[in-house]
Image 1: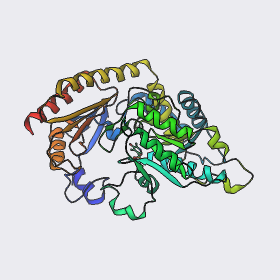
Image 2 (image 1 turned 60 degrees about the horizontal axis):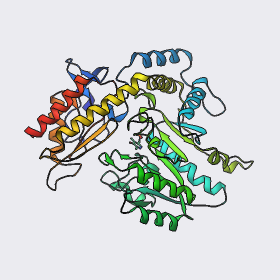
Image 3 (image 1 turned 135 degrees about the vertical axis):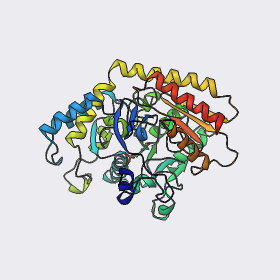
Image 4 (image 1 turned 60 degrees about the vertical axis):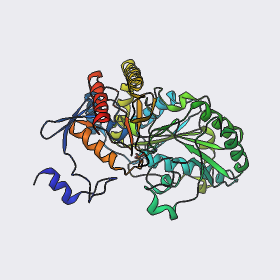
Length: 421
Ligand SMILES: *Cc1c(COP(=O)(O)O)cnc(C)c1O
């Protein structure tokens, strides 16, 4: 049996209808923006392997740091114990986050970072003797696949089987110049019950790279601050340069109370989640009453090997060459956008930083499950490009090390698809 056959005998893949999906492609090696299969065919990873990879695959510097760490300390329980890397990563990250971020809580992935953030907010109010239980979120939001994270995400095909078990959330529209005042009044009306507002800053990734303006997010956040509603900034996707600035909240003037990170945190090397918060939130859990403790933790909290990969990734992220690459991709995307935005088959092109999304004109068949999506996906794969359209939306978000030649190749395949499909 070859690897694909062995896989199909024993593996259940994520987000995959196993009855109809085409068999998975075995990948044996990665380098830069490239992934290579058993025959040596190269695939350009134009989606950064589900948005996690920022410095390229099998980066030698990260590999070296992870390997060193493995020979020193692979893991230690994080209750009652600590280790150098966990402290250093928190120190270095807090230093580049908005300056109200003072404490770091580690977990395993983006969804768990969100669970921790939600628990921090709910228990913050309880500990202050002023219970608030409502959470506000954007329609079409995506914050993860565990139950709490699912509950604060928009109701969709993804959540349908579980909708009746998800706690109620106050969903609001994305802010714009027409609705901003009504959104503000809504917040004012709900404020005594509102524990927090959770949002994806500027880009809703899973919803289809839906973008909204910093100016209106800023207004909404200003209002939440005035009304004393805690803000959870979900930077799981947008963190570490994706939007052209280190963090998407750097595009606004108001500092969130809580921030969540994962995806790019380790450069896409290992699973790691991080929730940071203000001193004010942290202090609300300090008490002689044990019931005020934040009772949350995972077996692998602050795993030293994952942390070593995050520290190495941060070293690379802070190099001037990385900022230059982010600018280069942004400029390149802008040029491509100008080139194709008037194409008859293109409804809209959206772009921020290293993310570009093209909405394909399909009449009414725009669902995530459209057949166009599958056709495009397979067309790009055959041409050696990994793009996973969200319904009729094609997006590119490459590792920052992608070369101009590779980017041009991806663009040319999209232009080709526009003509042929
Ligand atoms: C991917 C994602 C999550 C969930 O992260 P996982 O590591 O996949 O659990 C949460 N929020 C946003 C904005 C994401 O894009």
